[in-house]
Length: 348
Image (cartoon, rainbow, N blue to C red; front, top):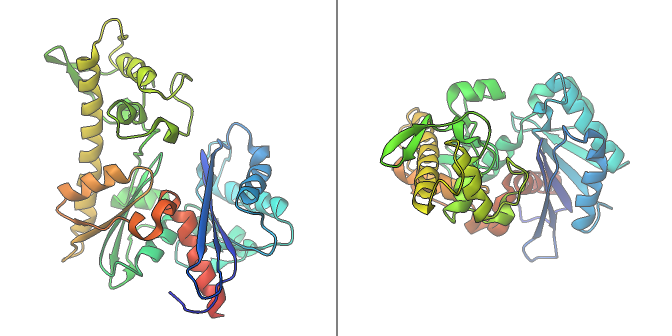
């Protein structure tokens, strides 16, 4: 990290269902203060509200006056947009509307900050860039290892060697191809995306494919996820409590809580959680196989508890990002891109 005073920066991780922000303020010679905020906002349902959502988040962090903005996004993948180019342009328009006259710096997957005009020309470099920011920040503290960042929706598995991000994929399809992106997260993944069958009454029952429950229900039921962290609508629109999570899990085998007791629900939940851990662990082993000597894993995100267990099964030593960023590790891309821009501006 630079020892020069840093400017005030707001970092953004603008997603399709969650938008997160982190503000870094320097105070003399002391360590910078980091504040974070996030909101569950599904852009597909109300795209016109994006600018107002961004402005409200900035206000929650003390306002944007005098701030530079460091931008990453994944919202361009939303079905509301026909192409990623359209999505990137829409997000940049919303930022300009929310913060007229403010300096916007868009982070790209190749580790550069570019102005919005350049990001519009290269939308595939600007879109889905949040993983690259987190990995670049982590590489400063972990010269060799793997970053495992699990959010509500997906998992990033990023190799780092000699303090450099050495991911083979850059776009989402390429990263799915290499295993560096795994489309499973701590909340939104449908149950049927993880298993074909679950234990039931001494046997194995096939699961329904009706979107009755998500992995978040399993984690809430097992006490691994706080209901308050279930930041998106549940499958049935009812609260994210353990009681209702159990009802949704019963539906996975087309049952209900009058038919299935606690033991049966527990078996379904554990099967889902185990399948997810094994999925992530297998991807970690696949990515790590290409880099001899990889021994460490930095875990981050809402699903860091999943990442930690997957890393242990892959034989890696845990280095929790929360030890450095504290609660900001939950919004790692936003905090990371803010740090990166603050350091770059201080060194200019």
